[in-house]
Amino acid sequence: MLICFEGVDGAGKTTISKMRADKLVGLYCRTPGQGKLGTKMRKILLDKEEKLHCEALPFLFLADMIHCLNQIKVLNNNHVVVIDRWKMSTLVYQVERDWFTDRQKELLKQIINEMIPDPDILIVLDVDNRRYTTKDRYEEEFDEWENRRRLYEEYFLTFKGKKLMLNVTKMGKKEVFNTCMDFLYKHPYFR
Image (cartoon, rainbow, N blue to C red; front, side):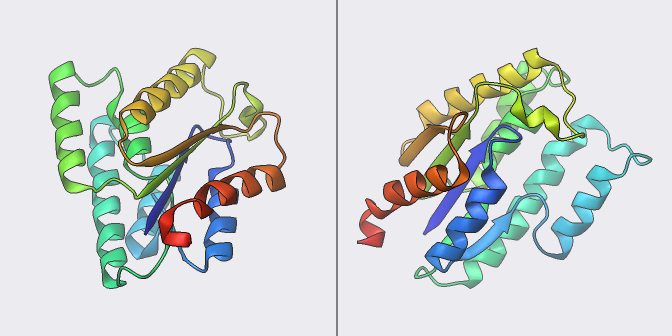
């Protein structure tokens, strides 16, 4: 069972997905940053002196997702795997960028969609303000942030599996957690 948490920066994906994995007695994965490859990749991405070329980013994230996917395959199907960011975030943050032509974007989407499976359950956490800007590292323009929200909504609408989009702007951590757990427990896997 693959459960994925997606959403814009600061919506609470990491906090809630870790809580879910603990509650569901599942494996928690974070992309990027799981395992040795992910840890090295995260260091490269956060290194202010070593700027990676923008066009390389989707391939780096794809490599990390493939690596994570192979780690997950080692488990049998009886395990719950909770992932903090998966292919939807790669599409929103690395593919839907101005430095790619429309043709390049379509090719990248095709490659990612063919190589990376959809989760069994998708939960998108959304916020309708810029509360996440309290974190020092997020100083992007409001238009770009709003565009990412719009892209998450578009991808969410095309997702065919079990899904929930939850606006967490006025919700506390416990309320978000309980709402997500109620949603998950309605899935036949957890009955």
